[in-house]
Image: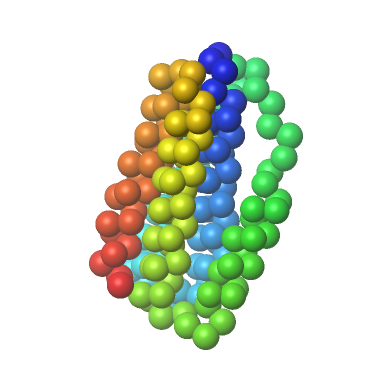
Length: 143
């Protein structure tokens, strides 16, 4: 295991967990069936990526002690605050675009700060960031 793997894999878990939790927090506010289906598909793919990162951590003997309760609470609070007056399809899509964009930014920051990262960890990070980019493009159709 390389030195930066722990931080990168932890960030992958955190960002995928926050995105999944945001989807679960927002899905009951979605009135557009197509968007609801897209969000559910996104959560399933995010689960797959998160599980890859978990398996890699287990293989490398990296333990994860917490499940990001503060980040989950902040994501839930943001969804509630942002949708109090506006639950339009476009607004929901915009919230999800912001979540995915932050995910890409945070993962890139961790990779750049931890130069010694294994190819396997970078591949999982790239998979998540590529998926986020595709998701953003798809969500822009709802704006």
